[in-house]
Length: 163
Image (cartoon, rainbow, N blue to C red; front, top):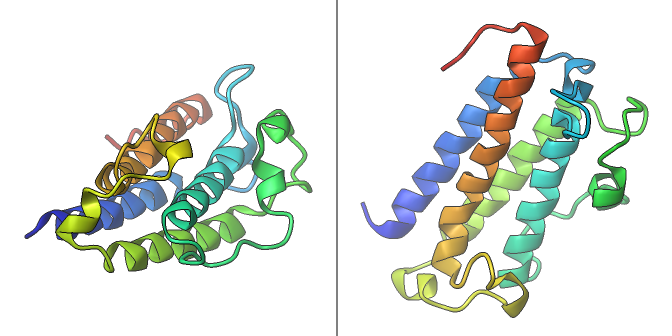
């Protein structure tokens, strides 16, 4: 297995981990906050979709599926305090778009070779990911950070402990 294949495998496993973590959430559960000021799962999942789309398109414009009109605006820093269920997509809609987004990331990753991993990331991303290889590795790490936050929501809601 080469580095790109390992990165793709990590993306796939991470996608499954996220889906398993949210499998028993209802639409109402998606809006539960673990504590005041913390983001709910609906906002976090939308944020992941917007972030991954933007990062990959930053490296290879047009590589990602287009987001629905107005989607990114629903998941800005200014909207993270919203709790209105009518404002956010449903859990099913978010998970469907997450699957399409991650499929786009994986399709992009499959175009990479070892030399691509050493290419500099776009300047605006270099503070977090200096190279394309760092970006490939960072995306499942970013999602896992949010999965950890989902685990706290699970505890607050009294759901079974998964790990």
